[in-house]
Length: 378
Image (cartoon, rainbow, N blue to C red; front, side, top):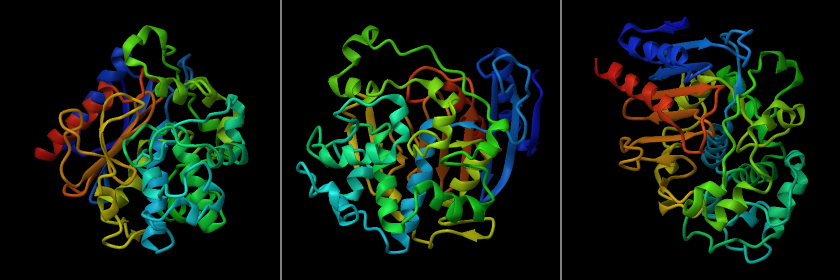
């Protein structure tokens, strides 16, 4: 059995065994798992390799690109600003970002951005991959363009654009980039090892993601709609972008967060704890309530699957994601996932470097979650 390091309470031995099995089978190359219960870590484990050549073991402080799991950090930032009465989810985006009131978007509200219903799931004008690092270009183009569907009527996954939209709202309110504000107001107080915009000083402990097979859009046939192509092909989503310094240094708040399971779960345990964890309070007791206000429910116009979305976070969506009434989640391209349940005081996260195809997760994270549930029942 693969060696899995770190700490794990005995009742969660099944979680450790599941990670070891996934490394042994080759389903995982290197990965980390963390479970926080009422704000405290009860599982903090890692194993496998940090590189495809298997020359560097995955260490306690290894970090990797977690893709859309990064979005949960932007959601938390907005919750904090809302809790401080600096942000109103029901206000027009243009209240904070006047240039956004173009091309029929005067009435687009912040909550539409949070729920992927703003109609801006991609860019009209062609973008190169490297131009994703140009904040002004990406945000000004979104401000100028018309929605692709009537805002507020349905979700359409804003895979990359959601981070720029939320980030620019945050910048207009605070005067800071979202990565800077997050580092000071969230990561530092919680002593959490997570970055939106990675300093060069941290490069030596990054595990480059192992890209999945390219998505063959043509082979997907009827599964592919025009909105999916427009969203994911401008620029084409290529996981190897995460290997480059331009990607790491940039703030791409929907996709380029660097961390591990411990740091993601440590931060999101604040949501599980109704605003506080380990003696640090980031939100009032009622500060997480907006999460559970449903913003979209139905077939997503981009992904073509059933979605139920609250204020940013995904909500219980049987049978695909049968969570409790006070639970929320999000995941990242290739397989990373974080689930939070307030009723159980639980935050469980899985982060890995070997990516699977698709943008809606795979069985590896589910295996970890199921073993965690078994441990809770023990």
